[in-house]
Length: 289
Ligand code: KIV
Image (cartoon, rainbow, N blue to C red; front, side, top):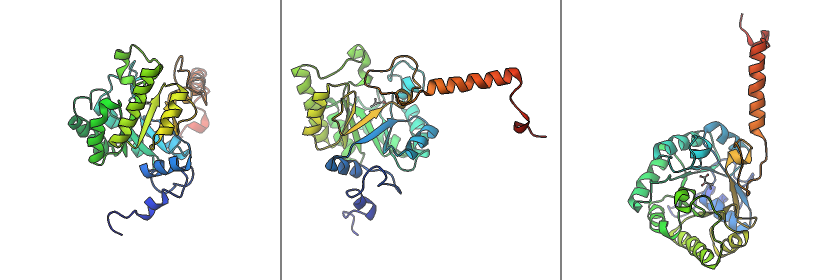
């Protein structure tokens, strides 16, 4: 086998499905490209720690994102802006350690790639070398194209992120839907084509009208991953704390809540506290003699 011929594991990529087909290795960018060819939709969830990531890995989620949403969903900040590279490296390493099969994508946080392609490369290398992730994600379309190109040339798989880009929350004045109106829709299409042209293997479309997301998905050869982008993208991503009902207060309109973990966990904590108060815990079976 020479360097350019695919290994047996790589060959498997074009013939097996993401769900159940890939069992003894991590999901790769080739698997995701093949899924688009087959029209197979896939799911992505965020993860910020080894335990939760392990649950999602065992559940067969093919791609886990160590999102900088860790800022608001894990570290207690109001936005993603304060998240640092050191925090992303630590959380990403935990997610990698807790999983066997999922592709792990880590976000480059605000301020870690916007200065220059060289800065993007330096920090992407940290996520790959120190945390062991398989790919990085960064925000921006045309404005990030040069950085994506350099990373891809250097062998870093890049997932792009366009539409609503939460790292720009202060410039946007909140989290408004993007791509509404002709000019904004054309810009979104230009952004999508720019990141594909630069070599991104997939692109997240956040908070864009469903019809526009469908149009982008049809026009791109790489998979689109929607969050608030309607039903026609190639894949979907949700923040796990929103999806599982851990988030306090209101969640965005595009979230479907599949569990009510906040109530389950709160009830468990209240029952435990009550048992301690009454002396029901620890019982004989929890004690050593
Ligand atoms: O940080 C994150 O969780 C994300 C998703 C919303 C796509 O970027």
